[in-house]
Image (cartoon, rainbow, N blue to C red; front, side):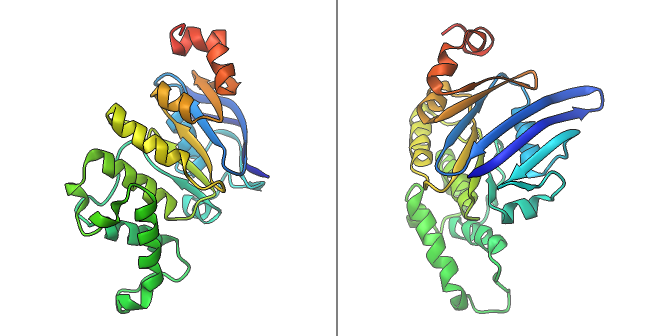
Length: 248
């Protein structure tokens, strides 16, 4: 089944053309597609278009065969689209548990009401416990404010919050940015173990992580798709070597 389809997607900021005629189809179910390319290639702009934070200048976006080109962000979330960001954007002074409960609360059809006793929402706590044990074993630190976590753990929290909305498609924008090689390896391992019903589209600059995780890869260059294919095909592509991989 088709999860995401982009048709001739373009984005201009005034006279600056950031993306031009980008077409891409992702199938649903456990696929990890890595989006790579030099800085300024248009990767994050593409994510902003898919998530609905920007409107395209031309082209169409489909989620599960439904045209969402002009659909607002929150409606795309309810269709099964989740996202993390390159720059950390969490409630740093709230506890680990509170951050997860807030993410779950925004997604549920029967959200928490401030005048109801918290005992009435046991299912929220059960789901939060499951998520925090699933990713990084952070349940033991549930009472700590995020400010007391390591940077690697905060990156894990971003992944947890992305999963809290039960996405079928998850956009990961440089999740290993700023991590040490060992921290990046841990986070990559967690991404590798994500449920098979989640299709992942991930921006990554760490080529070791990218090639280790990818089922397939897409290379953006100057706002256009330069190449796509398996990791082996991308490694062997002479244009990709010349422009991005430095001949390696």
